[in-house]
Amino acid sequence: MSDAVLTAPPVDIEALSISLRWPNTKVSCPHCGESRVSQQSAGARRCWRCKQCRRSFTVTTGTKLHASKLTLNDWWNAAHTEDDSAASMAALLGTSRVTARRVSRIVRSCGLPVGERRFAALLQKSDPYQETTKPWLQWSEAQRRVFTAVRSYIGGGGQRSGRYRKRPTYRRATLADA
Ligand SMILES: [Zn+2]
Image (cartoon, rainbow, N blue to C red; front, side, top):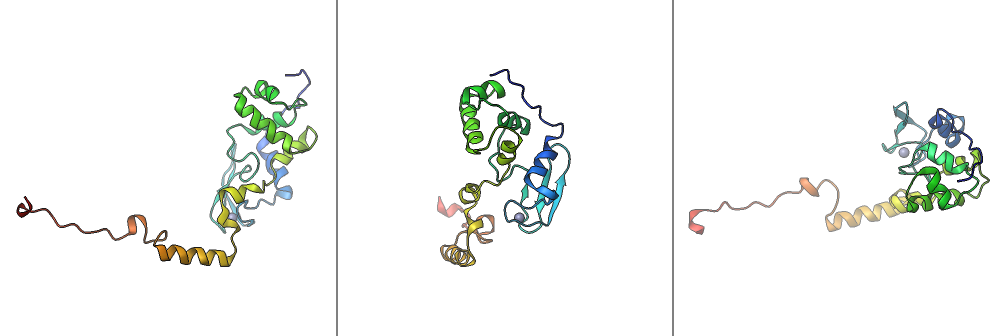
């Protein structure tokens, strides 16, 4: 790791991240874009729930940092290091080389100079996210109708599946069976 002075992360990095992701404090749902959301928890890890699709999210949901086990401070440091190689990341964050390589790749993919803008870029909505994890969110109304029709035809999903399905009745064994 180089001895270059790192910009220390701000005290409330969560608040800064929120303001970078949603300027003018217009928090909107990363799943459907709805702006009517209710805050579920305050403090260190703020969480909201969407009033339209009812799914919850945090400041990193749907971004390049989605589901990362590293803290926002770690990502801040990673975005502020001149040497963004995997070896440097491993030394800086104390992670495995596999994780360090991933961090290095993500940080470099922003294509922005080292600093706060690079950190802000990490918090932008990552387009492949919805396509890979929730493809049905991209479906048109017609696609949805076809899916529902096929599903009801093959008998899967809905209230008739799982524990709601009528269970077969079995005849109780009697002595005559023996
Ligand atoms: Zn939503």
